[in-house]
Image (spheres, rainbow, N blue to C red):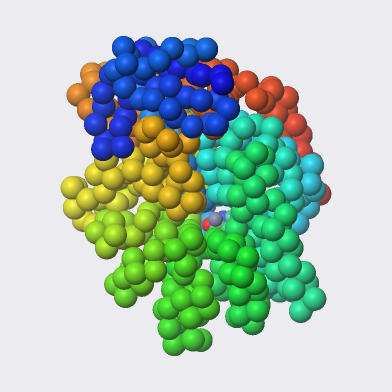
Length: 432
Ligand SMILES: N[C@@H](CCSC[C@H]1O[C@@H](n2cnc3c(=O)[nH]cnc32)[C@H](O)[C@@H]1O)C(=O)O
Ligand SMILES: [Zn+2]
């Protein structure tokens, strides 16, 4: 058994307290086996230096489209519908499997560098994402995004079948680090007849669902008018609000929908930067938390953010949460850290997001030895309001070191960046 000892640091515990402790990780099982006073923690075969650092759960980016890193900065300053139709979808139509691989690797590099150890991805050519995740060492829940809008019946069915096939084929890949979901893009871009037909198939195989919901008013209105129901009531009637399901955004929700989410155990992934950038609106995050809804945090794709840094996302969540509630005490730092760790992990069904014996050894060590993190009154406050992804010193996932002292070990950073640059330019040229 190979044991990794994360030594000399302060540790963020599940109750949001910080204590001086060492952490022992079993690199084979991928679990945390001990957390405690350095004298009580057994020796490791290998040591990771956490002195002047905060050992925290790896961040979990619970909603993204990883390969959209290729479209970072390609089209900005537009609202969702026009942005997707006029700019994003035409280029995405040109993306080859090799492009998706290159964009995914760029995204994984960025995630590892900024202390993210797990994520959920909705995209296409998902087999490339599976391979990239396997090699880079992260944990992920992956799925093929279905859009039936604008397709004929054969095309629409093919898309649904593809999503189910992807979910079935790759569940448990990468030594169990990859799990999957059936991913209809949204309640307006996938036709009701297809949801009625294919959701039961996913249920039969215990495949969870992930989709965009209640993101913009433009998306809510047609459902209210067409169905005479709020979008999540419509989703519930379609059996799309199971405890294992998680929806992205949840910006425009009424009180009954918030109750419905709490009662069914459906999780919401809050994406504050994307919601602000696309002017989608302000999600009622404090209301969701008060109702007992599981809330996770996501960056959404890099083209609407424009990075995959979950530290940025935490700050945005706290800021916009207060604005939305018109209350400076709403969405406090501790709630935000929980959202980005345990909340996201539990939405994705991973036993991660806690530095605790028995949990997955998915860990980030943040360097506290920095001007912008001085003094150390409250380290939970620092994680949300002052720290950045570039402060991360080490990243560990499933007991394996993915980044040591700022050097990513599982990807060739230079080659990844160069490939992404070339492939992004060529894809845009083809589309134009
Ligand atoms: N199979 C589909 C692809 C769906 S993947 C998921 C899609 O979500 C899109 N997307 C990215 N961000 C958002 C968002 O904020 N709301 C809705 N869709 C988004 C993204 O561009 C991607 O096309 C097809 O062939 O068109
Ligand atoms: Zn999205």
